[in-house]
Amino acid sequence: MALWLKDFSITEEDVEYLYEFILDNERPLTSDELALALIEKRYREEEQRLKSLLAEGRIYKPARAYEVGQKLFFPAFNFAPGTVVGVRPGYNPEYGSFQVIQVRFDGEDEVREFASQLPVPHKLDNESPEEWLKKAGTSPTQILERFGEVIKQKLSERLAQEEEFVSFGDQWLLKGMMPEIHLGHLNIAEAAIDIAGRPLPTEEILPSLELPSAHPKSIQIFSLNKALKEDGRFSLVGPKGYALWYLRRLEPPEVTRVPERLVYSPIPYAKEVLDEELIAVIRGIDDEATEEEFLDSAPVPGDSVTIALPYHHRRSGTLPIVPKTAFLFPEGEADYTMITFVDAVKGERFYGWAVHSARYVTGLAKWYDEIGAPVGAYLTLERGKAPLEVIIKYTPRRIKKEWVKAAKAQNDRLVFEMQLRPVGCDYDDLMMVAEE
Image (cartoon, rainbow, N blue to C red; front, side, top):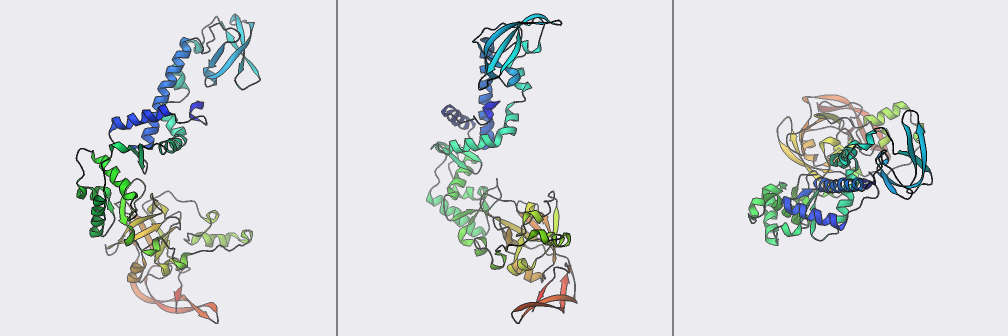
């Protein structure tokens, strides 16, 4: 149905309908819920329109008679409108005599012919508007699945222009339904996060504010989220759909400034000279700066993944976000999200930050130093039980000296030599590089 394609737009009547719809539901509603409500409204209107056209004899049925100049709608052509421009007699040995109407569809020069006054039964004569819509595969849920993204985008753009509609994330509410969140409430929220020393979900901050109980909890949460987002002291560090709040003054500088060793300036080169062996080497290095064409396709997210710690990440106290690790670090509403790491060997917890635009996770320098992780150490990352929790594991073993590559500067050149160094964990010998 063309209604759901490029011609779709949000009318003032639609806005008024959604206003009442949110009011009646007495809670914040998602874009999906509003889009489905609007589609169901339009669907009912379309069904009623078809019933009216049918009652007026304006929907083509083979058994009926039509005159030149009459405008009809054709179910077989998605109810495209056409005008009868001629009528001639027709005959078929199987059906007998009947009339043939000549129809020119709107926007077309070609004339098409259809049977009319057909003396034998035809399925189009008995179909109802409900059957037409069902046959076209255009139920409200099917329309949402097929055209939902376009509808939601246009819906969000229009509601954002309406002063009474307020959004947070993917939810919408009416301004008049929200309780007041004043400066005192926000100061209490700041103190709660400061005392906790960690990001807090909105549900944990809310009880301290003692908002009026007349407002449902879902509206209180929405209102607090909206107020925190508009206050520069707070940052949203949870994944999409999960509001987790922290204080900007407590965030490490690596969140907003890429560590020096991770800054990459592309160097032009001839890709065609790379043979399969070199490409295999590139794919074997877990580097966030690797061009996508050389990356293996992302695996289906599983429980865990193992990587070899690259040199620049060991020195920066970071981890790369590459296709095989990305599922552990989901993006949030902001550019960065806070990660809780759990040391699988010691059980200790510490925090890190996933910076999605630069594709790295910071906050691991102290842990690397504590375990004595060398460059090339195998690290296993596993999805934790809580949101944004990652279990990190290395395989410790009895420390012994092994021959490894060591890098040093000599006469303004980088040179390598084999040296005996103590190693206490499993590692990738091709990635292992020690420093003098």
